[in-house]
Length: 328
Ligand code: NDP
Image 1 (cartoon, rainbow, N blue to C red):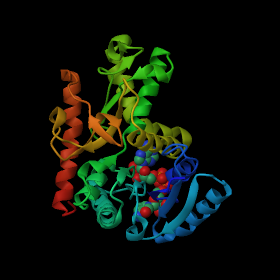
Image 2 (image 1 turned 45 degrees about the vertical axis):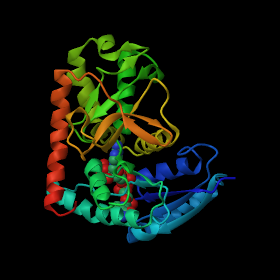
Image 3 (image 1 turned 30 degrees about the horizontal axis):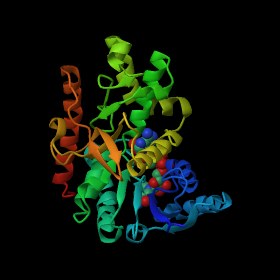
Image 4 (image 1 turned 120 degrees about the vertical axis):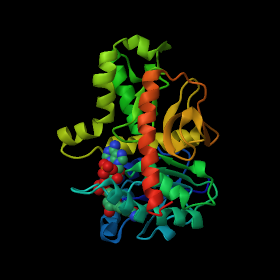
């Protein structure tokens, strides 16, 4: 049998962590033939709760789960990590300005970047889920100069999946008929879900919908504000769907995207589509042999251009703010 893959999960005692860990243990993160060792990171006050989750993981008797270790410091938690899922973050609390939020998260993601740099395995892949995810990923990446920048990614896969589901519902087709969905920009309310490059049963999705009113006033805001809708209806933020999207993100990155399709990942920009180099922005990507490439040559119409630019401008502002704080 193969040696286990070390998967470090931060915020392991949180609600996303609770949904995520069981799916990882059951083999859905990497594939059914790959044993995993879980390394859980929590803040000291939450270590006990993480230990409780570890007891339940043990009770799952998962054949692919080779072990669970729990840490309260990033240095040990990231030692030898092959995959790092950075879920724990400082949520925005009442009265908190964006600068305060970025600063509080800098206190988390800067030391985590440094710890990854010091101890992660050579093939480390990082996914940041904790918000503001794109800029948290940027902070971690900037503090890990020895790790190739492209190994740091942030999650827009939940937005991507939400967009597929809403489009499929509108056209009354199964989700599997929708291909080539793209989320551009920041994982925030400014994100832009693009159906102009998407396909439904091989037909252009925007043409199949043919309803600009729905696109502008229903689809885009619904996808961008779905998190708030979930909180309103469920009485708690989305957790299982976020965990599911994190699984999808890593699974596809490791195992490749299907032919004729792509996925959305927030990755360091190489300047493609006019996104300033280095910003961690969402793009359409194709994954193969454990790496990814930004899909090139897509048509961007004026409507899309304006929305992408607005979301990217927000990312530039966030980068400026964390630069001023000395976090990158
Ligand atoms: P959740 O597990 O619900 O969420 C964790 C993070 O994921 C939040 O930043 C949240 O952002 C973000 N997130 C991203 N996408 C989504 C989405 N679609 N829906 C919901 N959340 C999303 O938070 P909990 O408070 O339950 O748990 C957080 C845990 O992290 C706690 O146990 C805490 O102790 C731990 N923590 C660990 C740290 C560490 O390991 N060093 C550091 C900080 C915290 P948003 O708030 O914007 O929804």
